[in-house]
Length: 96
Image (cartoon, rainbow, N blue to C red; front, top):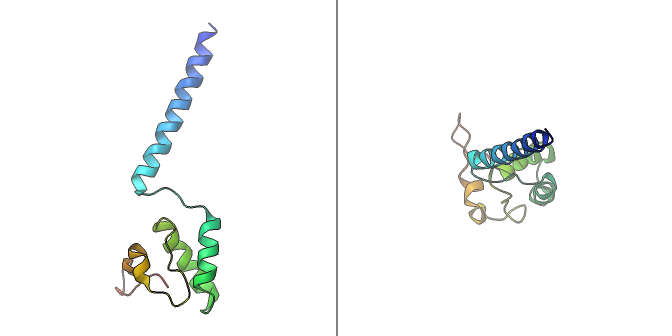
C-alpha cells in the first residue's frame, strides 16, 4: 500500500510537467521575466510619454520574447516581431 502514494505523486509530477510544456508550445515562446522587459522599456520610453509607452512596450516585449529596440529612437528593424505588430483597428504600428 505504500507504493500507491508514490505512484500518485509521480503521476501528478508528470502531468504538471506536461502541462507546462503545452503552455509554452501554445504561445510559441517562453515567458519573459518582467524585470527583463522593465529595463528595456524604461530605456525605450525614456524620452516619450512614459505611462502609455511603458504599457505598450511591456506588452510588445512579452509577446516578442524580450526583444525591444535598444534606445528611444533606435530602429524597430532590430526586432522584426516588435516592428510588425499592428493595431487591429487602425493597422498602425502597435509598439512604440
